[in-house]
Image (cartoon, rainbow, N blue to C red; front, side):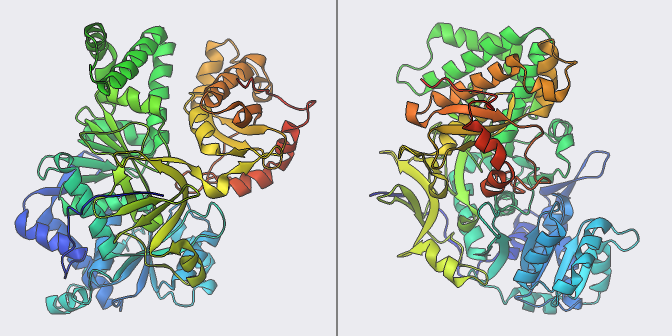
Length: 610
């Protein structure tokens, strides 16, 4: 049994809580910009003193409305400045925030708000308010619904006005009810394996994670210099952690609610840190490659990419990059790499990635162009990262070392176990599930992994996702899927084969890249159903499958695949809001396509396992 831990670099104060960060910032860094608001005509800075005052003004409005310490308040909105403002205001009155994804269905809204017993909810749009109204009968505890964008009755303005005469002493008394172990939020799991469970996370959990992350990544969190642009949904624990870390440091934080504007916002905000998930970095790479090919410079881009990967790999050797490699790298930096860094804002040297595996080649590519992606690993139950790569010693292909002050253990069956102050305290209203998730104080993550001699963790798959073929071979789908998805054409890949004679895969294509590829191949005029069956397209998909097969044994390799029309989306019910596959839903909805994989007469793709 492997185990590794690092000493804590940050200790939570005995009276520590999240609103205390704002008071400390207002006192110590009052004139420092800690937020930037996008008003449509550029970014307007908000100082630490002003943000603290705005939060307290909204918090007084919540008090006037009867929100009391321990009450649960829903928050449903895109990522925007007001999300952070309301979140900290809820905490300031001692209440508990219940995030709801802004894309949630009425049924999902009803579950989150009813299971949590929310007494109020702040939504973003009148459409959200209507969705809440449609399930109001299922929410007996709900007394208030405020809307951020309701014409003439915007939530922030209404609450600020309502609380104008609330004495400061009343607000201080509400905040004083908080301790490090008070619940801060109830975040519902993604629901990949069933109904979402509400994870109760404390102020201690956030402070432990964020304090140790900021301490360990110190050069990336420099007050008055560093900045981060947040475009992931704040309903997700990863983005929420970054929000708190930015306040703890403090550094300047901007919000992007529309990822369609991300390229423009990166260029105007120019962050020093970029936060993302692997799919974002895959899309940046694929888009750059597609643009180069469309402009007749595909060969140059591919040589530049190969050079970047080789250069990064050489950095991990004792000898380092050879002088011919250094020379090629310098040339391609002028021709290619600078433009790629500019597309990411031009100032960032590092990114933080989580949620899934980035893949070694892409990791080396980004480090090779001067933009190191630090992969980390965590779950909602661990308040986001329980491991992450050091800024100065990343080990590409791993998710880094344990968070300082925590321990990671690999059980005899390969499961990753975690212990530390950053863990959730319970699943709300589900004691049995909480008890099953713990063993002697260790949280059972459900992930499989390994620790190397220096404590770097590698994740190899999910226990519940392990397939056992008819021949008795255990297959971890993530290994193949991550490699296949790295191909520019591929949007999603789901490996199947439980109880079957061999491993197969369901594949969807990236619509944004597919049309350009088809034009380049002279197939642009084909109807979609013909294009998906065309031998040249199937051959290109086979290349992606071969890349995945190269990482596994013959018995684990994909022998046949099925290209599906359309894409897996959150709206179709096949992806969670954090873009994870709902495997049981995909398997149910595409049962006929899975069966067809094992019928020689209906396959539309056959692998060539090595």
